[in-house]
Amino acid sequence: MTERDRKGWNRRLALGGGAAAALGAGGYWLSRTGGRAQHTVTPEGVFHHGNVADPGSLDPSYFQNESEQNLLEDFFLGLMTPDPAANPIPGMATSWTTSEDGLTWTFKLREAQWSDGAPVTADDFVFSWRRLVDPKVAAPYAYFIYGVKNAKAVNSGKMNLEALGVAAPDPRTFVISLEHPAPYLLEMVTHMTLYPLPRHVVEAKGKEWTKAENYVCNGPFTLVEWVPHDHITARKNPRFYDAENVKLETVIYYPTDDYAAALKQFRAGELDIQLRLDSQQIDWIRANMPETIDPTPQLTVEWVWVNHRRAPFGDIRVRAAINQVLNREVIANKIRRVGDAPAYNIVPPGTANFPGGNSLDFKSIPYPQRLANAQSLMRQAGFGPGKRLSTTFMIRSTAAGSYRAVAAAIQQMLALIYIDVAIIPNDFSIFITETQQHNFDMCESAWGADFNDAETFLTIFQTGGGNNDGQYSNPAFDALLAAEQKEKDLVARGQILAEAEAFLLKDHAIMPLYFFADPDMVRPYVKGWVANSVNYHLSRWISIDQKARAALFT
Image 1 (cartoon, rainbow, N blue to C red):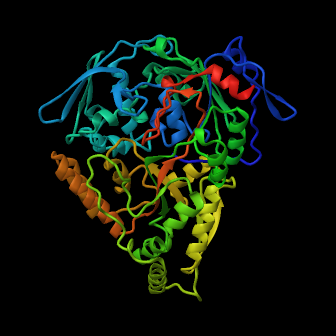
Image 2: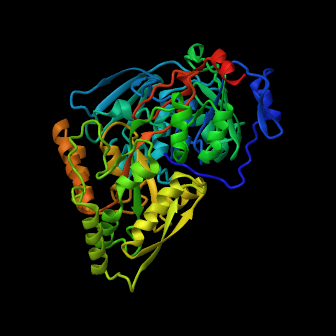
Image 3: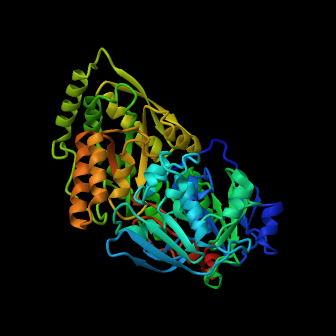
């Protein structure tokens, strides 16, 4: 759900060899002449997708970020799938029933094939879900299905895989048994980690199954070629059950995490959409290309993690001081300027089944007083003008742009409270690895909703959680989550979740910065793109108005 850059990035827009063959006789639609893109051929149904960053993996069990999400959604079909507005609609499931106590869900599956012609069965779902919680796999999202019966015990090695509460009584029936009712389950099962996996391929090929020549999937598109740091090519899957309604023939995804360079590509017509814009150019974009942007509030919060297991961040006084000195209004309104909202809590506005109302307790205090309070807290913690704290702040891009600008502003703010920060820009893949392994002091990161419910923003703080990068741990907080998961009443459950958020805020577990406004750039000739709060945009729903595209660039 974040970005990365590469110095000396080499964009190869003229594909050769296997990629050209995969695209068929029409070939690729751009060539290079004197370093400038020239339109030569425009084959029908080719979609050029600026996709934030290169994926770390195309294995759903190892899903971690937005660039992988956009690919996996095109390659696979779960029980349910997002419609153009991100509402869950039937995917592999054609119908479902729920037991009276809400603890058993039974899904009936459609007849469908994997891209190699093998049938997709309920056993493929059982295999996938068991693999997710297999402690040997060490999937970062294993905790995501702790609501499934025995999932936590299986993932901790206390029970065997067969104890997981999933079953396939026949090839067309998939049964889920839960620890507690989950009213959000239909939305939850659209998630990438819960896609079925081609067991016959994964077991035969092992880790090599995600190579293009081995890749087997059940979604609207199949993987053709992956050239790391350059492009990924996909083509329409003729065996997809709804292939006749898929308009695109080819999707080419580019890792466009250098936003300034991506804006140039977008202007030149080399990209049809670009996920993320160069906010330093927002005034120019609004003046010259207003039809391409429509920032939409997202269920996403940008924040600063501190590593709770590294001194002095285990000291609540230091965490509280950092939280108070961060000027969210300056960051959101003067540096970003895209439409983000300053964040004084964790769960974004508009999140379902959540009463809201929490905020950091200093929200109403004028900034000069916040600064004085923060300085006082740091002195109490043993720091001051004569003893400054030296630390590092890791960001997820090496490119110039808003991430550097925000980091520089945070650096200046922290200097006011005796903290000297060295900014460490990182290639996105390295950033993900380092944060997952907790190899940082401080970092700027973000969290977007996996489904529209407050739980997705709070469970990552539970002790030992797979995405708990800051290693936060508090038994009292864990107990609140356990109580929430047993509560059947939605209103009462929401109140417990609100209490859990308030606990994190009081404990300064994290430093929220702003609630994200989606700054995707989309050409008007891209049809079927619907702005939504979780930024789900499956290529299955997209088509290209070729006449409008040609008129714009000829």
